[in-house]
Image (tube, rainbow over all chains, first blue to last red; front, side, top):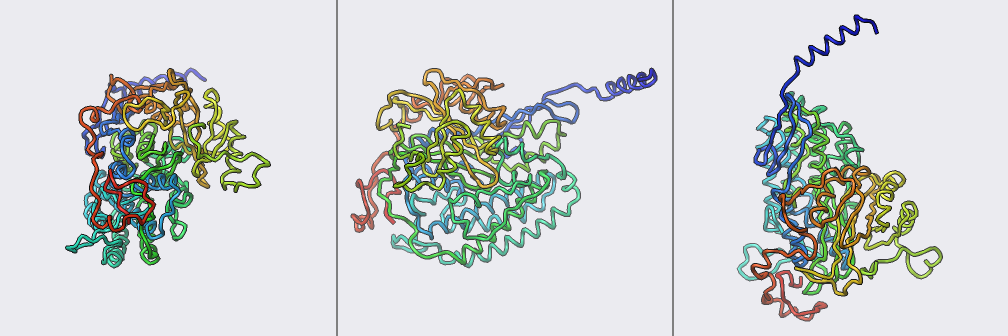
Length: 396
Length: 219
């Protein structure tokens, strides 16, 4: 190295350190910041516009469900399950009920499985539509919110028509689903079926949902600002995602065609024709795009299920007092947010001995320190929003 | 596991004549051989128990040789004779212990294996899995605060959910549930049977008269 080169390098280093020196500060985001979807707090070391050592602080919503499950009986636990990921409350019941049924070695009637499948897909649509509404909003685009929420309301109305609850259906029973209460009837008669208008309304609603997907795509995909803020932002490589346990649309947006609906047998998804949506880049844009396509796939599944729903009973014969035989099992399901599973340990009693709740959002946001390292502060909002988590699902 | 009789022991070679082999049995044997543990299949879940000192080694083998790259969860079970709330074990254990469980899965065929190991009940310590699966970080912090299990080599075992200075480990069986101490559980009261139910009485395989919950009705 010549003396001149040495001098040039020295001078450039001096100028760089003079220009960019900013005092470091600690930035506290949350726990009441609107972009955090609830009570999540981030503590970041900020150097200029870049954030380092981001530390998520969670637990503001911890309700101790794993302990509470130990002092409840099996039918009571579905009410807890609803409140884990409340945006898709219905979907949380499925793996728990399936785990209990597995230990009891119960054969669930096909019609009940079909109803579960239809409602799970509706919960997925509702959850993804909320994302379609809130994500552009966080990036400054308000219009998609109105389109997405309108259709979400339609889907929730259907869900409410069947279960009686928009967010907390508490609809699954061990061995089947809850018999619908005769609507409009003055006699206390239990009707074992879906509401009369359900099929027709669902067909209309699915057409509308597919239509709104087109509208959302036009609104967002052509929006230059939104694309600029999400393309190549928050890139998540598949190996890192897997090691952190990131699942669901977030994993599929990193190019991994892994969908538990295809590989596990908790519901008869093998009877339906649908695609596993993946995207190659793993950035915020891909995570948005995968969810949009998944709404379309869910609508397709529901349309097929409405046409193919078998008739018959909706409840297997179970004893009046449910006792689950001794044993343990892990059942996981593809929830809107990712892998949701219950590790159920029974000692033969009326309630579980231990119930480990594996929630998707908890693992999905454990990636935050990794993915936010060195990002610009405005990108924190874009990245966090694209991971689509719910704090109830994080804190349980 | 002595505590779980319904578990089907993965049949050993040569004695499969009478029992129907579980479809997962071959894979379970393969996993057990690769990581050096014992496999049981419990209700479609492959559970491989390994000694605690070989925990990290076994999970490393699972990741590298069996391609189980997706970290699902890590948690623990308190096998204890003493319970503050909830039903105690039907048969008391000879020796109380903690069981650490960790489920990992592959990303192609959806094969999943739950690894399990036993820890001493008085001073539970185990090596941290952070270097194998980065996602173990938060799960181990949770197991640490909830069960009091120490994960050697974990960089920061501060509380994840609980406030700082919280006393006790809530998911231990000996930890009381304060709300139950203050007021008895209203869910335990008996409810009357629905009118139709009395007609249908005797139709199903009833074990006990209706009580407890609204979910007792027969469909």
